[in-house]
Image (cartoon, rainbow, N blue to C red; front, side, top):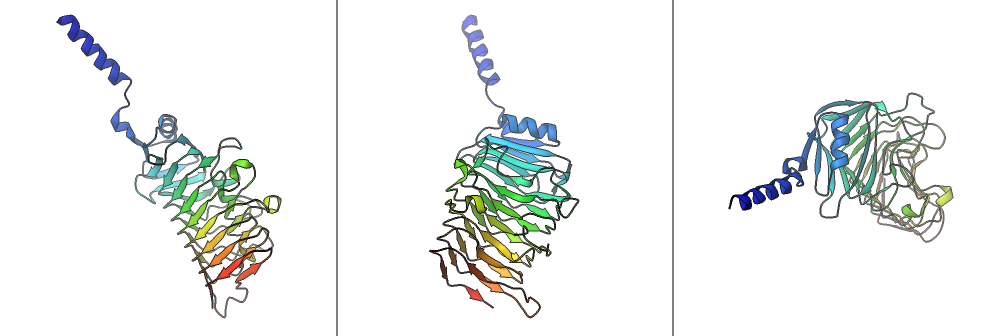
Length: 303
């Protein structure tokens, strides 16, 4: 009897030693070392919660492999109160990752993007999302230095419900990159965001959204840009530059934005239900400019 009980106790202790502490599912981290450890240990369904306050000079590499029903989430303790500042950036790699509630301010990226859906060319993100976050005035020290604020790679990624404003240096605010087989036919979504004022840069390379580039202009993207508000996005003459095939632009508002929605390269795009609103002080206001073939322009309002 004694031997049987000892065996049972030993088996139970062994089981618990290999079972994840259920409290870790909601991992609360207060510094970059704890954050890196939590990311390394994260499993599908886990939430990593960043403590409120200033996180200065942090380079976050969020690598993980969640599932459709159990994504891995990196979120602020309180949305808007986790301030990412100084020389900082965020890179995502893996599957089914969610980042929510971060606020990038008072700094700039040490790399070519503030938020990038890739760790490197071999490790990209898929089925991942940046949501309910802010990037505000997060500019490089020199105006002629180039970067992007959100750079898409991979497939089925999303920028949703974010506040993005004040980009003053060279480079599109958001770019969809189609280089490599892992990024074509990507079905990305840019939805329900506020793109705030962007001052005129003078010359090109100051789009608010650029989909592809001249080198990948004949590739199919299937990106959806929908329900966004473009408020005085005056960086250059193309507020949106579509340079790939099969993109859709639906139900967006362009308010006093001195530029146009342009199908710069590529074909077979849809522009439906958008509002273009200017006034007598917006002499450079644009509408839709078409290049290529097979486009549909329907149900738009120009004022």
